Image (cartoon, rainbow, N blue to C red; front, side, top):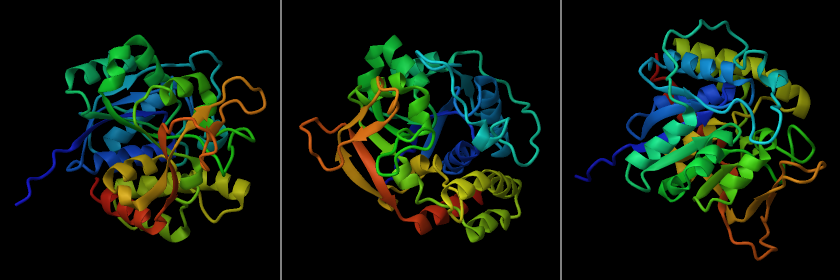
Length: 318
């Protein structure tokens, strides 16, 4: 018999957000493959007081009040916070009513937790999964540069190239909120896998896909369907699409089934100076520069396989 692989150790860094919530649920439903060491919250879709609360709500929904949640940066490194209540609602998890969480927030700061965790595990064994602005990760790298070579990989949701921007004409939200943090991460030398809008806009919900969540007959299925119903309206109106992209779960799906995705190993640079294109991920897709590749930039996915994985895993939760 082939020995079972030990679950991959990950830290999810997040600013929940309905699609962040689905990403967290997918990870917590996949315990054979993923060992979630902790969840770190950052300001992004909504302010930090709400993102850390929302992360705890999602853990309780998954039946995991034992999961440790840490609060990190409440603002970008050099800029005022830009939020996205216009998409996610004033709480970040608007849609169905949710109770306040009972589980406690950890006292330790998220940045210190990231540093401590990377130092206490063997090098190359902890993967970071940032699905919000990259502030916490960048602050950890700046505070303790010795952790950078210890990171196995960073699998992040952020950026865009062919799909251009969703918060400005040129920039995707997560990168735009803290472009200086993104620049630190993209220049760090850590192996990067990037889920840009180019791929996440192909991970579209449909009536049938949402109803498959609802048909689970579980609290998790009901909540995911209701959250999806809520934020679908924004994207359907904006893009004229039949559903909304489930952006953030692409990162977790990649860790579980990388063969659902395809992309190119290319150079990606972050624009921090220009007022016009600040936060743009300048992806050398056609390899027209001599800049060294620093990221696997994902461009396509098997959407049917992606939603089948989501439905199968989420059905395991309460």
